[in-house]
Length: 286
Image (cartoon, rainbow, N blue to C red):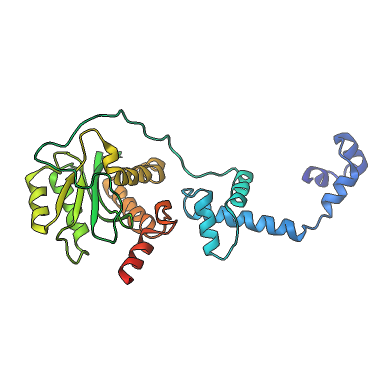
């Protein structure tokens, strides 16, 4: 249209349309077209979908976008959101599902798998899980994040980040988690059999807090599936989308993702698409 309009002074509309094999009736119809109410509503809804998609940094798929729009008093179905996402050619960040080689390992005789894959808790601060993951930083090499999750609301209630993978790192994450727990006595904390978690320093702290230590079987990541899933989501939605040049840059990004986004904004399918903070607030208010 812009080409025809720009050259209309040099050629007649008839000549241009003839040369382009473009019906003059179609040209004039488009030139004088006034969007209908339905077209306007379609465009407004597409804009709303795209706005939520970009607001959450391309991390949300159709279901979470639909829940977010409904909470903003924009009534819609998942299928409607899917149609608009397809039209906009947008989709959530995805990665290939992790496949591991099954290992029939067991827990040593002096350890116990208390949790035994029972990831359901009846309230907050009853069952916690913890693990360490690796994060690459350009100027530092490999760095390490230890996280502690409450299984009731899937909230990350404690974490610690370091340039070294040590027992101190693992212990500090649990200490940070315990800051806001009124009574730690009797809590089950589940981890793998890594040297950080079997260390004297880590075991001593749990004993001082009256916590029971549960262990995954060797080679069975599904024994600690919830925290493994969190670290997978963290990498998919944040770490793999960014290049960190310094330790502080990575630390600030982790703080923003965990404290601002994951705990307080990210809807969780296991929580009926509520946020971990919402579920915790409801539990503490009950």
